[in-house]
Amino acid sequence: MSNILDWLIDLEAIDVSVEQVSDVKRLDLSSCELEKLHEDFGLLTQLYSLNLSDNQLSDLPTSMSIFENLGFIDLRSNAFERIPEVLYNINLKSINLSYNKIKRMENLPFTIRVLNLSNNEISNVGSEIGGLLELRTFNASFNHINTVDAGIMHLSNLEILNLEGNYLKEIPYCAQNPNLRQLNLSENMISTLPDLSDSELERLDISTNQFESIYLSGMEDLEELILDDNPLEELHIEEDFAPYLNLFSAEGCDLEIFPNLGAKKHITSLSLSGNKICEIPESIGEYTVLETFDIDDNEIPLLPESFEKLSSLQKLYVKGNPLVKGEEAKILALDLEYSDLVDLQNVEITEAEEKDIKAMNKLLEQLFSLEKDFEYDEEKQTIAFKMLMHNSDATIVVAKFHGLVVGLSTMQQVISTASGGISGVIEDVVVQKTYRKLGIGSRMIDYLSDIAKEKSYKRLQLVADKNNAKALHFYMKKGWKTTNLQVMHYTF
Image (cartoon, rainbow, N blue to C red; front, top):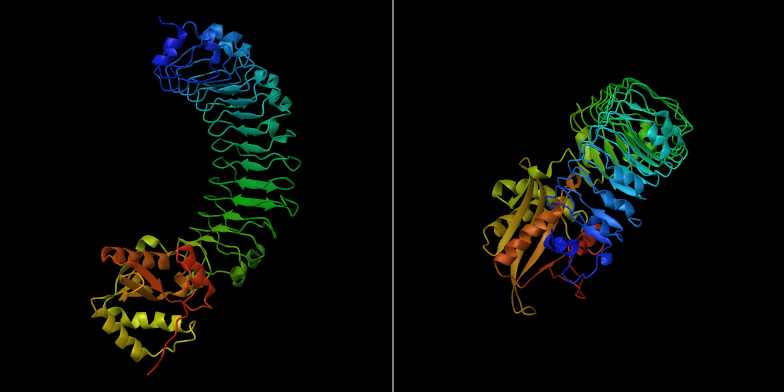
């Protein structure tokens, strides 16, 4: 076999300029189809980081035991059926052994801080876990774990524990560990929640378990709670529960009553889709920083009057509810970034037809109410629209939502001495109020810009009311720039 340097060069793992093994401190041998390592691999004594992921390795050479500097090793997606013995003798800080066929936790160095054993075949976390006193992050998700030894309580430095996708029937003892901040127990078989009121958890995910009833109190540091996909019928929440909670999710449960979260001043995301909730309480108006609200697929016919107080709300999901007539318009009137009531795939930007003129007049009436220089006159506007439609140098585009005209914009061709060629003037950009903030205006401008490019226009210009701050801000975000010109007009 060639020497270690030639072997590494052949694998394109190091540059040909490397002359000594001691120069190699970081090594990436991932996806090299390796079944074993070079017989002189132990000579790489200065290695600090080693990536052997996505190979066919089933063991590691004992010569690696002299690696005094190796702190990080990535062994994911190989053929290991057991944790290599040599690892026990290396002062490793991080080990990734995910996506192997490991059945037991063993041979782990006491110095380990980050351990990833996810997607293996481990059936229990035994007493050996108690010796890993430096462990900060432990991921054993998607194994066959049904028990966790009480020794895990000794891991006073543990901050993140992920046991998702196992067969646990109880929450591990470590839930009360003083430094534990994130606990993921989703996709298990747990049905009882112990008293966690004194825990210092910041994030708890117990979704997809077997909880039918949950009692919540205390947990002063909790910021995120996920209860999704449990057969949850009863949810008891005390007033002192999680005063700084900012994310609460109970999707796909059997809740009939809106959770009594009180006036949670810090909640930014609230998800309750797929339940049996019939009423949103008036107290929802007190969620002053709520940004995302998902209440899809419930049994809600009416929205509370306080809904309009949700001044921070940006995204609202309400489809799948038996909303009575008029409620949808109430929602679309909110200044939202997105609502699933309006599927933008169903918004079509197209050139106007004469049958659209009546709806276009209504939009122009809205626009002229904002622009003091103009007065709406249906007869005059109808004449103008027909003239534009029969002018080959003009274009009218409309936005249609399920056939309903909800947006309008026009463009006319002029000869510009400044640009030395043909330019376009865009006017009458307006979107029906209940459909604003959905990108429709932007799409109409882009549509007209594409036409201008096809016709080789030199530039585009538009006219907007100087007092319409929202419109001016919109145009500037699109890349338009203000000029020093003052637009004037003379009426005969």
